[in-house]
Image (cartoon, rainbow, N blue to C red; front, side):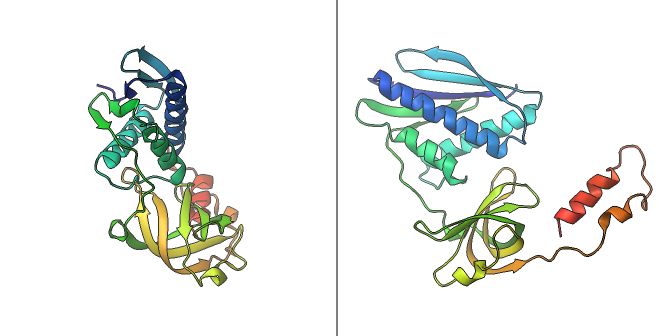
Length: 250
């Protein structure tokens, strides 16, 4: 059976304004998850059912890429399980923020919220707080990408768009490491530190305890001159694709 349905249920006496808020955060959460794990697929989420009483909304994903839909469903289940088990939500802050906002509607009138899919369901009866990912969930490694943004609000952080997945990675500097970012803006670098990875795709999400930031020199070789050197047959990667991949991986 295809896994393509997501659901949110509110229990209690639900005022219309709070229900509308819940639906906005639900929609934003699904959109953020689609952008994060949906393989760049075009997924249209349609309302499958609205129920009164318990205030339930079910939505179903439509796409030619069924695998992308199932990844979003799995990520939604991981978020529900993380909340239930008082564990950090293992996704970037925009996703975690929307999940927290949904549980933040538990105010006495709304007594619980349920995250559910065809094969999964958890009922949450308390708001969740901002949680830090613990060091035990990290492993040491390196991430290569382009430095996009630098923020000094709260913890000093910069965003790296990694080469392999073309996704944002939050990188956190410690006090006294500001000099590591000199002349790094909009340049390709290699960051070494403790990396937390997405449990589904394996892509890097956070880098903490940074050891070094190494600028990557641009290759002096004209890669386009290599076109046609390697024989090509039906089903092989096109030369220009291989060249682009090799260039980006430097």
